[in-house]
Length: 297
Image (cartoon, rainbow, N blue to C red; front, side):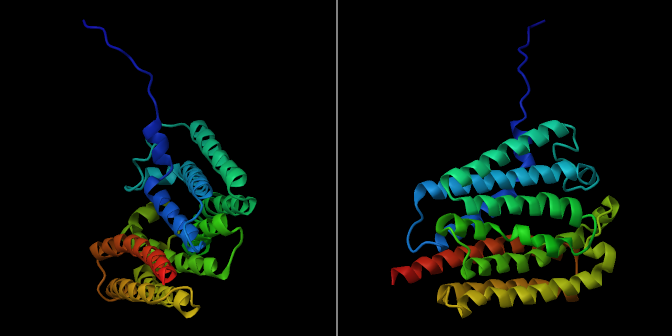
């Protein structure tokens, strides 16, 4: 029999999966937009790279803690049962050590190479998501997404503070956009995953208040979101390019929300959920394009 070479198993792929790369990529993208908007020109390279890496690492650590706390729930839900912890590919100790290591490195980068305020706000965001939302709010109230959305809305503020050293009213407008976007984004998901959330014992809005109530609130929060996205124009932060982009993007989101309310289907909710991610990416891209277009004049 031919001899076989046995190599030690590594867990690089599993550790990467713990960080929820797709979620973190959207977080980092929004943070970077905040960095660009905070500057009259291009952000300084070293602080920008350090801030991007630091925010990404702390966000990945928060995601890993979320996976650790919710591994029992993840095991009974189709979209999460393939994660490393439910499959037994990583231990609790490995996960906690990994999260502590990358989170600590991320916070050090922010403190040493960016500024202390960014580090403290990023730490507060970590606590808000990994502890307040994941441990306290998510299993306790159907308003978990609304209240916990504050931590998810922080990335552009973190990016802004990383470059400017202060929180301005413009940064808070970026926060409000994501804060208003979060409920219709997640409730669209919750509508077509209702049975899984019920099986997991999570009090998501469709489980506790029913589909009709949730569909109405998707529509109402999308209307709120539309109003919030126009605030940067009203304050003079943005101009015509952003306004036109926001109006088009909002019109499509409102059309999805209206159809969810009046002629619901799971496929429609899936499409609305996917569009909501594209919506936020394009809206924040429009913010940056408008910013530099106005500077060029």
